Length: 195
Image (cartoon, rainbow, N blue to C red):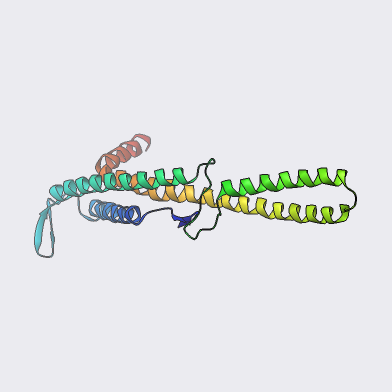
């Protein structure tokens, strides 16, 4: 996804998210697919001690989660730096589509309208032309306000992608995979307490 002409989520963060989710789901599959009473499992003719495999999986996921968070923080800082109200941003294609530049254009149009209104009072000779220009400027202003609304909606979606999809989802699933044995005992204790 691109936001204001720049990539919102870097390839590194997408990659770490994908690897983190795949590893976490694989470890959860090991927890639920393998019998708890078994001490070892055979995969491709090689015998593995399950407690070693689970420990290695948890350690790997913890490392992957740290790697993902580092990549994500870089993307988050970039996103927050791009979206400051004080700056006018330009996308890679050279055009200006940022929220702050639209706000600047709207304020400039409002100033022009006020200036024209002052001129209308001063001179009645070109009053008809000035009114037509004023109507044109007001219609442009409405279009710009609509574009600003669409950019605000895109900004909200960008925040969802950044904070929920690429931070909360991978980190929560990783925590579940790492702490699954403790969560399983806690869930069993809670269910037995109420049943």
